[in-house]
Structures are given as structure tokens and as C-alpha cells.
Image (tube, rainbow over all chains, first blue to last red; front, side, top):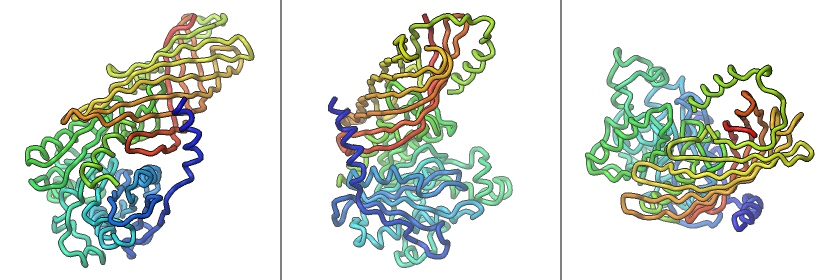
Length: 288
Length: 172
């Protein structure tokens, strides 16, 4: 009965949202492809924790609005949440990872304006966005990935994000062919293997990386073994990592309640995933 | 989910109007196939209200989904009022459903509870119940749901999502 009352109240409270700054250009050279929406908590504060959300879509589809509901949820929980666009296919690697690192540099450079502590910015993403989130956290200082945007140039060598939460992604492109990655790189592995190594987060694992929470649907068409391999690699190098894989969750279908069918949603929308994500953020970037 | 789709195809192929007599059906007990796992089970009883082609379905479920460095238990209950198009308990229906679930997640690495996430979902759906061999039922459905969740670190939030269902069971 209490929760039924909460439902009704929440339907009214859902309009009590913090301010949202939309279509902020973090790199003015590429139009809408390099913009972000920044969702702020309803209670303004300084030096707060933040999270950058990177949408999925096989590096060819999707946009920042795919993460609007999640960003609003993080903002309600007290985090500054920035959901970003980045250059998609037909753009070529390393454009997407450069854009993600440029966006991170933008948030840090403009931390005062948005009430962010630049040392407390986490990054998350789903599917292709999860790959990019993991790549941001493992290859932030790779020479080929350095953004040539204004914020990247001003900042100098980039710092890693404070934490990373990649979800339902591929982390190693050297082991098997992925047609979208071939399109993104513009050459096959046989013709040019080097980019396949530098675009694979697992190839950049070393000691001293930020903490990771790796999330994966156990029934995802993207095999969970890839996530397990990343987790094992991070642990072998003494990095802090937690692994949540969820039984019954696929790439686009997963349960939410205990009594209904499958919801058209990502595994990260499940209650178990939100509980683990918010706990992980409180432990890494700090509770708001 | 692939198993559920294959099951549907086989059952549809096996179903025959010549076999299924159009007898009155009053109750159905079903399992939800879309989320059926060794770690998840939902059982539903659908009861003909014998008025205005209405039936009332009640469901209870349990799920233990989190793996790796986490564990979880989710318990829930739901009710759905169904309005059947031609004959109660078979064929097309439209339904309105209300569910309540509680998901408790534990961080196993340091044996720490993360609290309980409460989920309330209200949904509308359409479905079609196939009845064959006089007693076996298969009911696919699609719908839209408004989900409200709140937890220890998560204020109440509302979101929408599509829902796909597939139950299988017996009628009597």
C-alpha cells in the first residue's frame, strides 16, 4: 500500500526535475555530433560528483537522448549527469574515442559552471557506449586517442575518469570479426591489425586504472565471456573491479518485476543493476 | 527467449481448430516463459469472472538474477483484469495490470546488503490465448508499462517501457 501511494506521488513528483542544459557543443567543429545534454540535480551545489553517459548503437546509430531517462535518474540521485553524442560511422576510428575524451575534458574544464568536482567524474555506457566507456578508462593517455579539440589541447595529458561502468560491450576486437568495427576502422584485421589492438580496452589493461563496475546480461548476444575476460585481466593487474552479470537479461530484453514478461530495456535498467551502480558510485566518486 | 519463440512456433503448428473444441474455460494456470530461468519463476492463475467477458489473473513470482560479485532476490505479486473480445478465457484480450516487486541486492565481496529496490509497474497490454488439445494454453502478449522504482540511494523515478509476455499452461 505504501508503494502504491509512492507510485501516485511519484507521478506528480516526476515533474520536479533539476535544470537541463541541452545541446551543449563540447567540440564546435562537428555540429550535433559533438554535443551533450547536462542534467543537474534539483538542489544546486558545488564540487559534486558527476557521470558521463555514452549511448550505444553499434558506433553507427543512436544519440544522447537514448540515455535521457537514465541521466534524469542519476540527477535525481544527486549526480550531475552528462549524456553525450559522438561522431558515428561513417566517421573513422579514432574519432569516437577522441570525442568521448574531449567530452570528459570539457566537463572538467567547465566544472565550476556545472557544480562538478573535476576529480569525481565517472563514465558509463551501454553496448558500443560500454566499449567506449571502457576505452576511455583504459586508454585515456594513448597517443592515438588524444582529442585534438580545444579542451583536450588546453588540458594537456588527460587524466582517467574517477570510475568506469561499462555494460554489455565487446572489449576485445582482436579475437573475432565484428562488421561494425571493420567499418569504423576502415580495414580488415588482416590488412591492418594495429587499430584492432588499440581499439580493444583489454589491450590497455595495466596497473593503476580507475575502479570498474562491469555489468553484463548473462543472456546477451554479446557473450558474457568477454566481460569476464576483462574483469579477470583488470584483477590480474591489481585494479579494483566488481562484476555484475544478470541471469535472464539479454541485449534489449530483460525482466524488471518478478511477475511480468520481458521489458524492452537494457540490463542496466534492472533494479539489481541500479542498486549495484549507485552503490559503486557512492564508493568511488562519493555520494552526493 | 529463443526457447520461448521456438516453443511458440511449434505450438502454433500443432494447434488446430479442428482439435480444440470451443468449450467454456473457467481457469488457467500458467508459467511466464519470457523470464523463465533456473533462477526465476512466475506462476499465474487466470479466473473467469463470468461477467462481461472479464477475467482476473493473479501472479506471484521470484527471481534470483544477480551473479558475479553480487547476489539478489526479487519477490513480486501482480493482478491483471482482462476483457476478452469474443469468448472469455480464449482468443484476443486487453488487459490492465498492476505489479509490486521488491529486489534485494547483496555485494558478495564484502557481504554487504545494498537495500531493497521497490518497483511498482502499471501496464496495459493486448494478448491472444491459443488453446489446443482442449487444455493446453499459450498466450503471447505485448504492452506498455509505467514503472516506478525507489531504493535506498534512488529517489522515486518513473519510466516507460514496452513489455513482451508469453505464458504457457493448462486451462480447466
